[in-house]
Amino acid sequence: MTRRAEEALLGAMLFRPEALPGMRWVPAGAFSSPDLGALWTTLQNTDFRNVPSKEVLSAVSAAVAQIEDQGLRQCLPPARISQLARACPDPRTAPLYGGMTVESAIHRSVEHAGNELRNTAQQAEADQAVRALAEVERTGNRLAALDAAWKTAPETVRNLLDTPAEEPIQLAQRTTRARVDLHAEADTVASLLSRPEQLPEVNGWLQSRDFSDPQLAAVYEAMTTLHDRRAPIDTVTVAWETARRPGAQPSGQVLDELARDGMGGTAAYTGERVLGTAVLDRLDATGHHMRDLSLHPQLAPTALVGHAEQALQPAIADRERVHHAEREPELAHTDTEPAPAGPTDGQPPAPEHEMEIHL
Image (cartoon, rainbow, N blue to C red):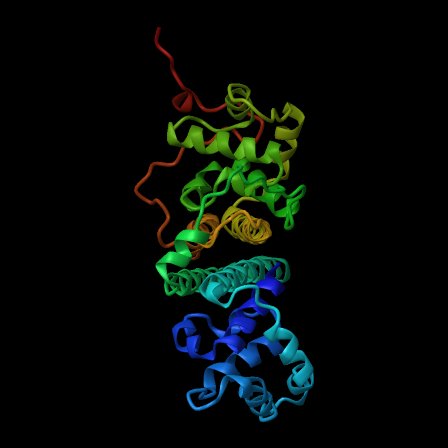
């Protein structure tokens, strides 16, 4: 369908070249192939004011012969130009064909932007998350440019094409995460469980949704909740807190192993790896979402760009968290009293540290 709309537009201009000045809102880059884009540029750059209608095709062929790229010239022989001149059902509908051409280009651009985000997310290392997220800003600028390009189309064209989808858009969800670092996740949770006083260094930027393992996410969320309450944090209190929540229920054995294997003082370092990996995975998910949006012809340009911009929001929020993580530990919550630590040597706590509950 895209090709037919592009050929119809070109055919309309070959039939009525005097209409070309009113079609400058269609950029050459909107065409799906370089040869048609080159022909559009050639038509826009040719002065047809003194060319009789019977000589238009020969004038166009002569102008095409001046194209520097030999491959493009070979794609546009006189026979091809004559064929295009017959491809337009109604030259008066040229603006609508132009709108269809631009709409298709917007879909391709969103698809390309989504694929670029996925490639960036899959190739970057966890410690390169900041650099990878720079692609988000470029993508946002690209979407803004697409929206601006669409708004240059005549209002009558936009009213005809910018219609809501007749049915809800169903998108295929990713079945697996693209980036996972279970080792860093386990090390982070284990370090925090053995030394809960590290929580102020990470809980400002590390979230439970950054963990791919549901049990580790549940343990981390329980610890942050207990810390916010200024409650003791140990394997028993964490087990009790996780039991009160829906979702994964880590066993006592898992908690004991985490507490035993934890290395104190490493949570911020491994936590940054967890965050970086999760950020890259969500960047991949964003690209996947944008690509799937672009493949739905039911989405009109304004709706497509709007949905794509909305899909970028999680990645934009991640960028702020990554910057926050990089500023730690200077910005750690030093004004917050650490949660009391549980016993680490297997001995009961000293009497003065026991919690007293008065009924």
